[in-house]
Every structure is written in C-alpha cells, then in structure tokens.
Length: 237
Image (cartoon, rainbow, N blue to C red; front, side, top):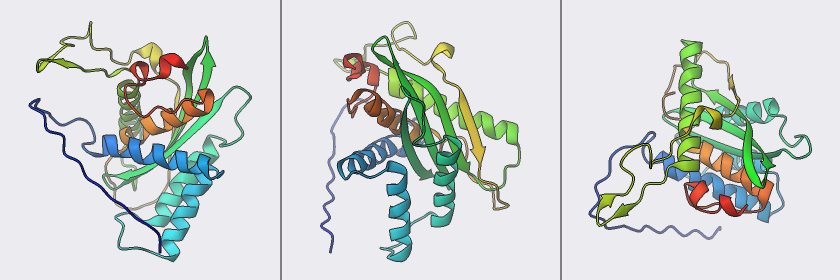
C-alpha cells in the first residue's frame, strides 16, 4: 500500500479574477510536471522513461478511472522524445520535458536551452500532439504554436502585482509580454490517426512552463517554482 496525502487550501482575496487560457490546467500542469521532474532526478531516472513507466504501471494496475487513453498518451510522449532526439543534445544544450492531457488532447513537449551571458536562452521547442484527425493542418499548427508562445511569455515575463487592490501594471509599458525576438523555433508533430478531433486552442499552453523550467534546471541547477521566471530566480542563474 502506497502512502497518499492530499491537502487543499483556500486563499481569500478581494481581488477579482477572470479566466486565463486553459483554465485550471494552466497552473496544475506546471506544478505536476515540475514535481515529476524533481522525482525523476531524485530517483536517478530519466524523466521521459519514468513517465512511460508510470503509464505502464497504470495500465497493469489501474487505480480508479482516468480520462485519457494510455496508449495514446504513450505514443505522444515517444514521438516528442524521438523528434527532439531526447537525451542526445549537443554539448551546451539542455533539455526539459513535460507531458499533459487536457481538453481531450495529448501533448508532450521538449524545450532546449543554452546559457548565454549567464542567462538561459530558449533555442528550440519540439511538440508532439494527438488531437485526433487533423482537419486543417495549417490552422492546427497555428493554434499549437500560439498556445506555447503564450505560455512561454507568461512563464517568463507575466508579472502582475497589486497595491491596495489596484494593479501596478496598467499598460504594456509596465506589463511585459513576450516579443518576437523572445520566440524560439518551434517544431510541431502530429500523432496520426483517424479518431474524432479534439481541442487545440488551449492544450499546448499548460505543459510548456514546466518543460521550460525543467530545462532551466538542467542548465543552471536552479529549480524555479514561481512564475514569472524573470522575477523569481532566473536572474540569479
């Protein structure tokens, strides 16, 4: 019997909130996939293989029900690892991995970073997606790339603070968003099948922040647990 503890906490605030792309999943994926990376490192396991092993374990000894198909999740992870040449990056290139299921779509991502002038720089993002049959490939790629660019921008720069209940950033001169020069090359690969099409506008955003944070850890040894990274540790890298 494995020990299990789940806790919940409520944060009381008079600041109203609104929806952000991929509601709930946008922060859950970061916590979950960063935590899995920490477990892999602590146990001396490869992060990709550990995820595959967990899927195999869930397939052999299921606990309750899960909303995803294990074989589709496995295929997506394997495709991303293969296309990114996982574990065989050139010297000076550090890879981070993340995989997540949301909006009925399977996503696996590899982010590659280097360190230039003492700061991590994103060199490439490889993304594998199983969204069923791809009806409009060009539009599908746009959705996938847009979700990742949006997620990278918020993970790196999206600092919003309040003073006496009022936002201190009220326009784009004080609220930093991602710019074209910050956008890395992105590769998109689809798991080919003829299944019913599923969501694409949101699923690629949730896991990208964890893939980036995991890559930064390998490059710098600094584990980032708060976003935006530019305000919570990356400057000390």
